[in-house]
Image 1 (spheres, helix red, strand yellow):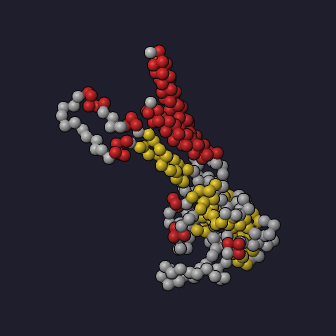
Image 2 (cartoon, helix red, strand yellow):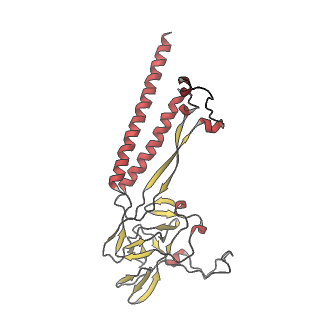
Image 3 (cartoon, rainbow, N blue to C red):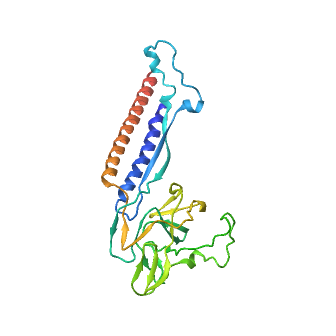
Length: 280
């Protein structure tokens, strides 16, 4: 019953798909949530052996069409998942500490695990007067480093480069105004500038949860001035289409049920074969 591994692997892969779609549906109302998609590939034994799939050079007979070339041992495997970074709908909130991004950029924040990037801009002020995320992570001010030569030299980190703890945005009492460039003003004075980062390839960002992303390659960060616009008093919604995701979830569930019926059929065939053998 080696063929049983084919539906078993399909059930495992389909279960992963169901869980991914269900997570998308659950976060349909989460601020700046980006939906995920599973990627599958089919493994064929003929590919592993490197054999050529030959066709008979003759008049074809019915039995020629029964040659499967190992396809009966094919099984799907999860090749990975990717995040869809399309823009979510921007809705006004009239809260001066709510920030929405119109573009491909991310806001830089700092938490217990280091620097992270997010588009979830529902900020507040902690007891120390620092601008923080809804999870308490400090919002980073833009860091301007001087250009050295052709940009390929290694810049030695010294006391002139502030640490992430020193880059927190400290606010005072009074109205807050943030323009499209991310410049934060209070009482007519420039307090700080939000650190907005754009990436060469967003596909390499690693999803951490709570709408946070990690970037493990500093070369992936664009050095040019970001084109992303800051919108104060608004939040970006999720890019999940609820109707589409619910339809996909129903299809995935039905496929999983069909695979489970195949597994049950294999199990019944095995039990019948064992019982028949035991009679002899």
